[in-house]
Image (cartoon, rainbow, N blue to C red; front, top):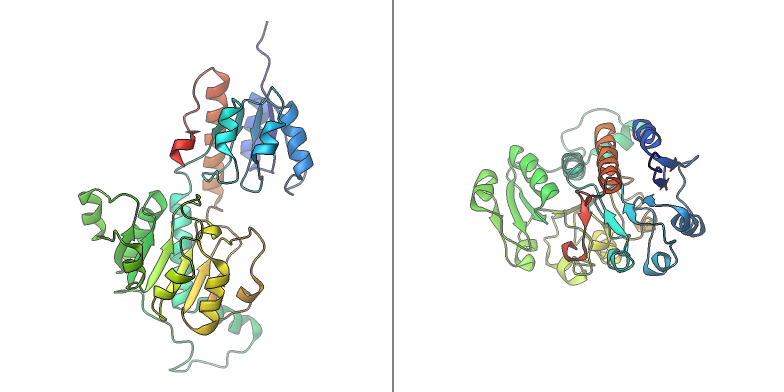
Length: 328
C-alpha cells in the first residue's frame, strides 16, 4: 500500500517553480492570492495539516500553537528569520520548526550597499528631481553627497550577511569595523582589514555609516535605543536591512528631524509594513519595501530549502535546517 502523502498548507504565494514541485511531492494546499492569511485562516490551517509552510507575515504565537491540531508536526518557514514563531512553544508541543538560512546573504548585502550609496550619494533626491521635471542642468554645488571610500563602516552583527556587506564595502574602499557577540577568526578580520569593537557604544561614536545586520531577539530589541543613537556623529548614516525592531524607530525619527543623524536607508521597519509617517518624504531617508532578499534566484533557493526540509522530515529524518530555541 503506497504511503499517504503529507498534507502541506502554504500560507503565501511562492515562486511558480516551488509551488509546482510542492504539488508533485505532497498533498499541498496553495493560496489563490498573495494576501497574508488572517489569524482565523492560519489557525484553521494548523488544525488539519501535517506541515505548515509559513512566512514572516504569519505571527504564530504560543496560543495559536496550543490550539493546533494533533497532525501538525512541522512548521517549515520560508525565510531565515523565525522571530514571528514561538519556537519554544512549538517544540514543547512536539512541532519542529525549520528555516532557510544562508540563501539571501548576498542579495541582502547588495541591498545594504545600495542603501549606503543611495543615502550618501543622495540618489533618491536625484531620481525625484528628474521624475518631477525640476532638473534644469548641471551645477557645481547641486546635490552634493559624500564619498564612501575611506569612510568608517560599523557592522552590527557580522554573520553571513554582515560578512557579505563587509566584502562589498571593503571593495569600495570603506574601513570595516564590527560589533559581534563573538569575535571573528583572525583570518577573516585580516581578509577585510576589519576592526573588532567589544563595546558597541564606542564603535557607534566613531562610525560614518552603521549597518544593522543582526537578527531580532529579546536581547537585540531596541539595541539601538535613544541613548545609543545620541552617541553617533551628526554626520553619520544608519542602514537597516535586518529587522526593524532592532532600532527604536521613534528615537531615530527624532534624531533625523533634529539633525542628530545625517540620514537613513531602511528596508525594514519596527511595525512591519506600517512605516512611521515622519519617515516618508524626508530627503535624507531612503525607504525600501522589505525587498532585500527579493531576487528570483534567492526566492527559488529558499523554496528548494523548504522542499528539502519537508522531504527529509517525511523520510523520517531530522530536517537539515532545524531551528532549536538554544540557537535564538
